Image 1 (cartoon, rainbow, N blue to C red):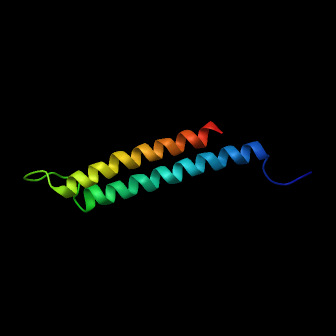
Image 2: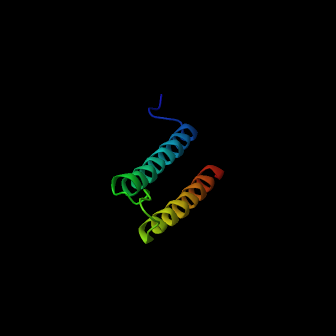
Image 3: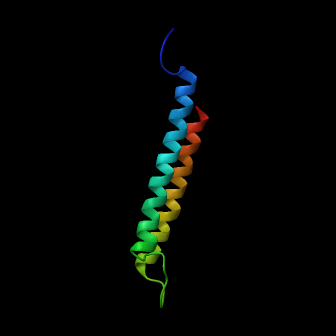
Length: 74
């Protein structure tokens, strides 16, 4: 009797773990940059750092969703 997982279950688990890890990494980087360093907080007026952060946020979200689409399409 062979030991280990079935190949289909292993591929599915790999997809789930990849999705979770990349999602948590994206979330951590955006919370760190936005809240901890304060780039998402608009105080007196909109600064160039706020604009750069929100641009990064939207572009990285689009990239993450595209990665999810390609990963789960297989």
